[in-house]
Structure formats: structure tokens, C-alpha cells
Amino acid sequence: MNSGIISDSSLSGGLDLQATLESGQTYLWDRDDGNDYVDSGLSGGTSWYSAIIDGNVIRVRQIGGKLEWESNAEVEGTIRRVLGLNDDLNEIMKENLKDPLVDAAYTKYKGMRIVRDPFFACVVSFICSSQMRVERIFRMQQKLRREYGEKIRFEGKEYYEYPKPSKLASLKESNLRKMGFGYRAPYVIETAKILEKNEMCTSYILEDYEQNRSKLTELKGVGEKVADCICLFSIGHLEAVPLDTWIRSTIKIHYPSCYHKSYQDTSKSIRNKFGPYAGYVQTYIFHYLRHEAGMTGNIESIDKRNK
Image (tube, rainbow, N blue to C red; front, side, top):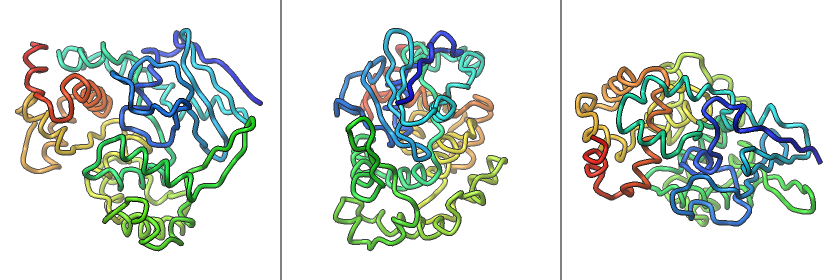
């Protein structure tokens, strides 16, 4: 077994592992105690999380001011990449902390980072995200891994890799509908068929953010919002701001000058306001308001509290 420790103090802006993995960015990590998305606040926990990344089992937990990891391989570099540990969080958030709502969110969940999930897993996860709460998205992806993913044994326990495009491309719609995928089932299968021809997915990973978002919408079930999720949580376009109904309502209340009827105009305005790391700002605000006010709560009260 390989293992290691990364000190929180060595990371600019620190780390909040639970907030990072349970904020709706990624659906690849299983929490050992089975209480994913259960604990109030979703911050500061010490549980173990596990995932298979690049064919290797990775287990991580944060305790006593350090990130501990275990694996069947040397994976510290992978961990730093997929958990965004190389991001200079203090520098990224510095200018935007002048905004009282952003400051409140950052103070509450300081150390939450943007993940870089494997591309195909991220695509399918967010195709499935439409009109779903994060808890249900997670359970759906968990079932998909356990039913169709490759099994790897590590330290006496079984772990399941996210299915490859070729595996999901071979399924029938009925296979996924039985698992609760509903109308998303054909989108997942058709997108898998597209991507199985190029499992590295290089033609869908572009340096230019705007071009990348547009290219991603060629995939079945990927609209502008899902494309932005993929850009932000897999490819690393940190300016991307996924605009679902909740975030658009939040913008309308808190930043009305940035709100427009069209997706692209709102996206451009909010990116102009918060700059090249607008995706970080959005992720902090989303996680903060989701737990301070609730997804259907009175988010206006939070605005008044922070003025």
C-alpha cells in the first residue's frame, strides 16, 4: 500500500475536503460511512472518501490539519490535480472578497476547492443533473459505477471504477431506465457512443473557454449549463459559471445588473463582474446559500443579513 500526508498549511487558502467533495461538483467519491450529503453544513468532516481515478484506488481523509491518503499506487500528483490543491486559493478569491456575500461564503467554507474530474464521468454526471437534487445525482452515479464499472480490490475491499464509454454505449435504454435515469437514458447512451470513438476526448477539451462550451453542446443532453459544469469541474476553465434556475434567481436578487433573459448575456455579465475565477465565486455562493437558506428557502434574507 502507498500512503502519504499533505499538510493543510502547505496549501494556499487551506483545504476543506468535505465541502469540496459534497458541494455538488463531483459524484465519484464514496464516503466510507455512507452519509454522503447527510451531515448538516457539509463542512469540516473527517470521514474517509474513496474513488478510482486513472485506474487507481484513492482513499483520502482530512484530520488534524492534514490530508491523509492511501492507494495501490503513488498518486499524490493525481490527488493534487483532481482536488485542485495547486490552486492559489488566497490569490483567486482576494479581489472578490470585497463583495459581502462572497466574503460570507468564503469565511464559512474556506478551503473548498474546484475539482478536476475525469472527463467522461463528469459529462455523464451532469447530463443526469437536470431537475435533480445533488443527493439523487450522487446515488444514481454510485449505482452506475457498481453495476457497470470495473471492480478493483484494495486492502480487502472492493471498489468500482466509473464505466468506460464503450460499456455504456453497449447498453439498452431499458438498462438505465430501470436504474431511474428516465428521459436521460438515451442521452447517456448516445453521448457514450460518440465518445467511445475517442476515449481521450481530446476533440472536446479546448484551451479557449467559449469555444469549449460551444463544442460540448454537440454531445447529446449537453446544453449550455451542463457544458459549463463540464468546463468548470473537469476541464479547468475556472471562469465558467453554470447557470441553473437556482443560480439565475440568486443573480437576479443579489446582482441584478448582471441578470439578463438570455443565458449567454447573464454568463458574460457575471464573468465580467467576478473575473477569470468566477467559477470559484459561483461555487462558494451556491454551497453557502444552499445550506444557509435551503434550495427553496428565502435567499433574500441572506442578502439582507450580509449588508
